[in-house]
Amino acid sequence: MTSHNQKDALEHLVEAYDTMLKRVSDAIKKAEHTTIPALKKNIERARETAIEVGELTRDEAEKIATYLERDMHDAADFLSETGKEFKDWGRFDLELIEDRLLEMFANVADKTKLELDALARQARRASTYHTGEGTGPGTLACTSCGKKIHFHKTGHIPPCAGCRGTEYQRTTET
Image (cartoon, rainbow, N blue to C red; front, side, top):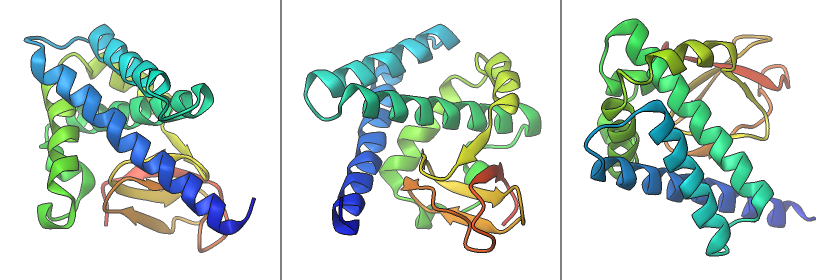
């Protein structure tokens, strides 16, 4: 596969992340109460819809669903531990983040905050981000050298520019 084809494939997965996030956000907006099982079920539905309409292969949809759930866990962990607002999680000015994506992500995170407290504790154990995965907006720090990488929108995690490391942790520091 050429690097151009690889870039197209990565962009396809980034767009799929945004599409699946929108589907989850829309489902949560319709629900009166959101619980942890309901959030998981909405992510599963978004995954299955992406497969059914031919947007993604099963493997791609599984990866994106895993990334989406991981990011939701990370956001819930931040909200429950700090008591801060969702906009503080990404540590960016609202103008720098696409309003549509922020609104969808905030809707999911804010509406499920209380229900996700337990899920957040689990997320602390599984919040390592790896090169090759996708992620939503925010800042990741290399676990080897501490160099930070900033995502202003959904993106693909590259190797660390400082040390070529492949593992990151989300940070609220800029």
